[in-house]
Length: 171
Image (cartoon, rainbow, N blue to C red; front, side):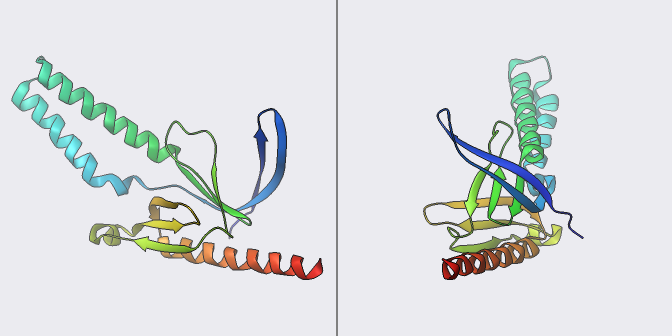
């Protein structure tokens, strides 16, 4: 059972407060680390080569070791700091370790939702969800059970359309 969580979103332009809205979060999810299994394998192999071929005391070995280590830390941080929210009004996402604000995709802007899965992703039961909006296309990487998330977004888009249609009829 999903417990709705509310979060308050304020939009400011300069020093003027434009909009303050409270949205109920229907589902919150994060990408999985399993999405990057190939990169972790390559980085582990490069660290192994750095130690065996060059040694830890040479400049080449230290540079391969430091670059592989920094890239691994960046990928791990970006996976754990990325967050996706499905609310009643929009899909919000915050990607990467350095982003602070959520990027919002309104349901009325969404044109198409597709799922991309490779053979290994199918085995790991993860996939990439591509949301095509009016001007941009956004990829939600490494999502567990992407078919369920796609159906949830489609259902919320339909209910948002019904709410807007009902409001138009009332006015």
